[in-house]
Length: 71
Image 1: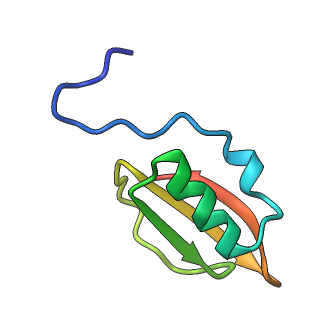
Image 2: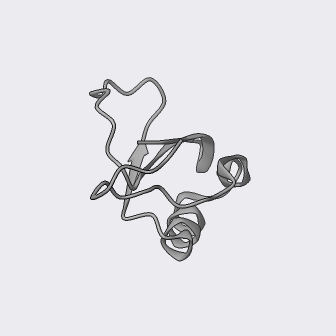
């Protein structure tokens, strides 16, 4: 798909590589990869489902990332 002009693209990143990291290290990795926003959430958090380009979402339980997704 051709990128739309004026809409920022998400960084090319291996999201599976975040699973198992502690939240601090995950934030560092995300910043190095070019993510503009990182949202850290507890398991089963109630969140809005709007897509935000450049945002990385992390679910953290017991001190480690258990899930990671774009937007």
